[in-house]
Length: 237
Length: 237
Image (tube, rainbow over all chains, first blue to last red):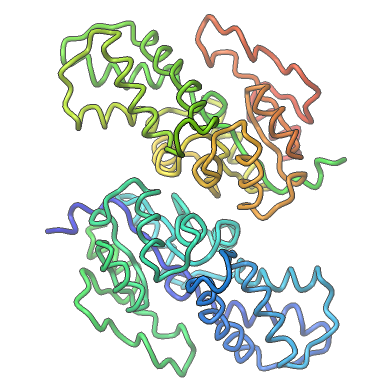
């Protein structure tokens, strides 16, 4: 089977490995509740996340030069805070809240699955998150990565071809020996177009109760699983 | 104390964390002994290592464009093999032996020290080794890195200023919040010139019985220790 040659698994992180929506809501509440704010915390997380793709798109199109995701998160936070009537935060408070994305928790099944998968495969992030963001998150959430590749080393945001190509080059593996793991159809299609093997993992709760896309694997990916332990089992780990 | 603000430790790896000389000698013997060769295995390791600085220097000076260390190791191997009368290896055998540097063991005290240090600090490699080399070595030797920075992400070899500057930027820390750990005076001087704090760890056996340089800390580095556990103790871990 072609996937027998796979040596490394590369992971989408936000939504696939960690639960960004509950984590950002919690971190925002932790920061702003003591200041007397009582917001729709999940609504705040959704609005913040909604700025994510448009901000990266300006980099993808060349409208602005490369800038890492921690910076985009901070800029987007400054757009969202006034929408919820929040004002008067210090620069240090804004910095700290902008790093909410470094303090997200893994989905409950993720660590067990990653631990099993790591016995057989090199595990790397192939996320739009930058190195410091990924490294701090891994320490917070206990994620056992062997390497952080993805956007920062490629100086480009998924789903551009070079994000996958340069990540494969950094792992020193031909793309057919790498399997991209994601809960997002578009990420997997882009990875597959660069020669990666693909594994879809279902994350029905990523966007909360009103999830409208990535409800299921929409293509014939190499593996389709409903959790990381199931992925591990299907890969013989 | 200024080092109280340190958030991350960055490590030289070859010689400081891992024992390259015995490891390369062992790996070369493992590869070539079954073919009937009986070489001075440590002499082979020394000759291979002797090609290391001149090869990087061509990149530092711009005589050739950026190329990662795995490639330089392979090129240097092709220079050394005929000096020892070794011929007729297949491309796959040369590839595998060139990756001897991915299969080095840690100094006996390193894992204990790193494990203690990691409770308090982000631990990152700041090596001339590329990402795949560092990641595979970490799996082999059990090194608990949080991030791999250094030459490949900087596209430059130590001791150029940009190797340290870009590594600090990737960790998203000002250099004064990073401590460079190395067994080499020159590496620490270069890091200090970019604003890093410095820790010298003595590795008297790095070059075998005839070590002639880096016999001791020759400057007033922030910390001087004779092992990683002593470094951990001196840093309050």
